[in-house]
Amino acid sequence: MKQNKKILPDIFIRTYGCASNRFDSQQLTFDLINNNFFVYNQSFGSDKQFFRDKYESFIASKVKIFIIHTCPITSYLEKLTNEFIKYLQKINKKAKIILTGCSTRYKYSLLKRKNILNSKNLVIIDLDKIPYYLSKRRGQTSKCEVEFNHFEPGTVLIKKGCNKYCTYCICPRICKKFRCLTFQEILSQIRQLKSWQFKSIEFAGPCIGDWHDPFDNSLTFFDLVKHILEQTDFRITNLELHPSDVPNELIYFLKSEKIDREISIPIQSGSDRILQIMNRRYNVAYLKKIFKKLFTKIPDLRLTTDIIVGFPGESEKDFKKTINFLKQFPFFQIDVYSYSPRKGAVVSSRRRIKVEDIRRRISRLKEDRILQKIINITSL
Ligand code: SF4
Ligand code: SF4
Image 1 (cartoon, protein in one colour):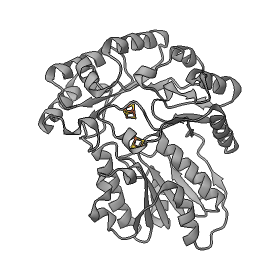
Image 2 (tube, rainbow, N blue to C red):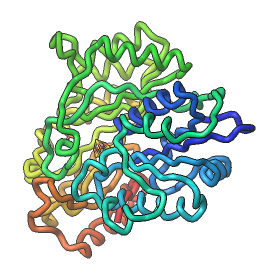
Image 3 (cartoon, helix red, strand yellow):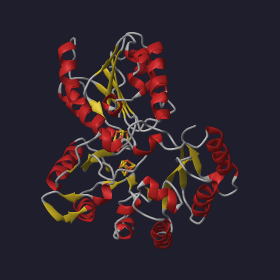
Image 4 (cartoon, rainbow, N blue to C red):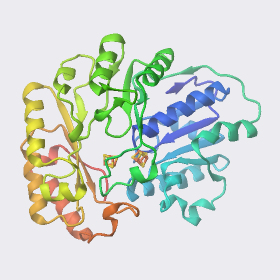
């Protein structure tokens, strides 16, 4: 989202984590703008690189309020967030830093340690209380024009909470209320994004592929996508599907010019034994079937997947199975996460793989002639 460069924003929002957090940051931006604040929402920022350009870096050094939308999904991500907080405190000593989002609701968050919480100018506030908190404290602010960066999509929330309970994941424990939004609620969000002149949308919510209207089970994700493709001008981008929710109609969707060919289907492992311990609800034979179909029918597909290396109990044999699986298909990118134990997740106390062994396995991916070109190591 780019702003008028002559007047500087009052508030800078930085977001970590998934599309649900991006949705919340987007809605907070709308709320704050409606309350006459001038907001810079750094949607789609990189976790590792703090600012995208000199302009962002300049705004960050001048704003009065910095809102950090947190995610505790891995300890690595929280460490990066902590590094960012420290950096911010150096470049803008006067800014108030507000932490909000999932880390603030996670009992064991690294960001709740005393040395961070006691730091000057830092407060934790629930997302829905931020507009009130800020309106109580602001000085004189006049309404400003806002210009969105229309190369980035608007975010449409279609589900809240997750009921899949993968054994390594803390999301269902943090966002406890599970709910699919109604078709009408979703259409109303789409109208709002149209009024802000967005050109493309992404869906937010875990496992969006099993969305259905809570009042009419016959209305499925397929109907929702079909409606958007046929009845609106929006492009659909950043499609991420849990393997067990890949709809039969995905090939039909992907033939439309209005859906990006770059989609993500995270497999996490290529070993049935590990997939079962992870409670992923699919097996390797099923994965092979859907990927074979997708790659055959959509030749220009750019399919990204995720794997976790060093999941507790992962043997050499399991890891080899994952490598073999990955080499069978022309993936566009493979995001590699080293296993990050999080207290509260079912497997957090299981026997862990030694860090040296995880490093060795990741090195093997880096050295593999085929995989080295497409892997993206996101932690360790
Ligand atoms: S904890 Fe889960 S739901 Fe919350 S931002 Fe992170 S990935 Fe998203
Ligand atoms: S599907 Fe699994 S990994 Fe994804 S949010 Fe739900 S519990 Fe977490």
